[in-house]
Figure 1: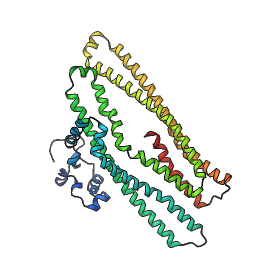
Figure 2: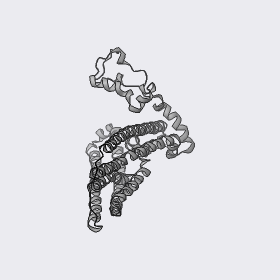
Figure 3: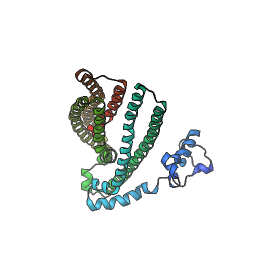
Length: 369
């Protein structure tokens, strides 16, 4: 290890001081599937605090120079960020969608097995072997779901990192060649916001693109399964869901307007702050500290007011979304028992409850897409 001290550095063995290659490059199939290639680093972190030299080097295909060398010519050819992302990472996004669809299938397997087990328990003859087969199959499917979810999340994160690297590289190169006129129009604060917060709206495309079709698919399948359990009372729940989505759409639109206003106010504040730091000597010589301090304080108060409105809208939306599944459950069960005059058995109740639970996630995320 180098004798040059670093902050919170610790002594490490020579064999672990340098990691020359990413372990994924030499990992076998089973290790890739189960993420066994990460065990060595996890074990080392369990023994002592990790040192920067312990971390793996970034894979070549994920390095900024490699990503930007592919992204930049594509972007110059079509002048569209969206088309560039789709042309370069469309097949990866499709693969992530396949993994997420398989994960959804594994998720929906739980209520099916639950109904089968409860029906077998309630039946006149209890078949222990059949119940054990259901339990073992449920364990296997849930283990598969965990692996699929981990790989889908990893693939999504890698796509996000690549898009982030490419866009920040383009912004950095553009900032280096700005002429004097453009530098007056685009301050350092505005460019800094593009690097940090504004770019998140673009890369969120990679995170949520598959949810555009997966969430409606999940809602449709769950409602169909509910119809098989409690009949047309499930459509009462669907009506409540529709009302919830319409209400959340109103709240989501108000949130978007508040967020756009917040971003504009943040840009104004950052511009004022950079003006102060860029002309500090002039401010001191003319004793303008209080004047510019009041200006920045006024901009900050307006920004905080908008932020408070945004947080309030978010709180109302979250409360509404968490109460919606309860309303759906109560309405559906009330119609099934009181209007349809049907009996609620344990198999029907617990199966329907597990399906209603699966509605919470889609109902929360659909208005945000």
